[in-house]
Length: 168
Image 1 (cartoon, rainbow, N blue to C red):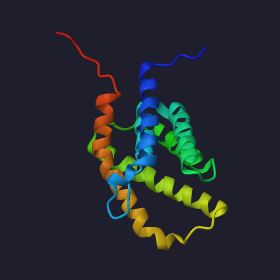
Image 2 (image 1 turned 180 degrees about the vertical axis):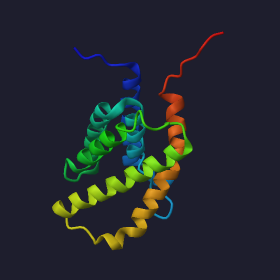
Image 3 (image 1 turned 135 degrees about the vertical axis):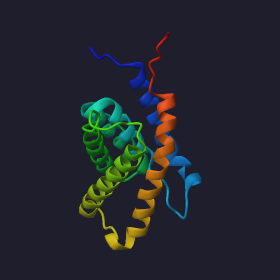
Image 4 (image 1 turned 45 degrees about the vertical axis):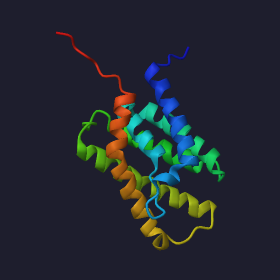
C-alpha cells in the first residue's frame, strides 16, 4: 500500500501550479525573450530534499506534464527532467541545501546538463537550428533560471519544507 506524505502532496500541488504557470503566463517574467525554467528548478529542489529515487519519479512526472502541455513529442522532457531528478537527488547527503553556492551552482550544472541532453535528443527527433545560433538564448535561459533559483528556492522552502521547532 502506498504511503503518501503530506509534504509530497504539497510538492505535487506546487508542481501542478508551476506547470500551469509555465505553460500560460511565464512570459510575464520574460527578459529579452528569455524565460526561466521554473519546472526545472522545482525538480532540483524536490530532488535535493527527497533523494534520487523520489527525485527521478518527480522529474519523470513533471517532464510528462511539460511534454503534454507543450504539444511536442512526448518523452523528451520526461527523460531529461527524470535524469536531472536522479542526478540532483544524488547530492542530497553531499551538499548543504540552504547555501547560496548550492542554490547557484546546482541549477547551473543541471541547466547545462538538461539543455545538452535536450538538444541531443531534439536533433534526433526534430529539425533544429544549429547550436551556435541558439547560444544567446541558451546562455540567457541558464543565467536567468539560475538567478531565479535564489528566490524560488527560498519561497519553496517556506511553503513546502516543514521546519522542526524546538520548545524550550
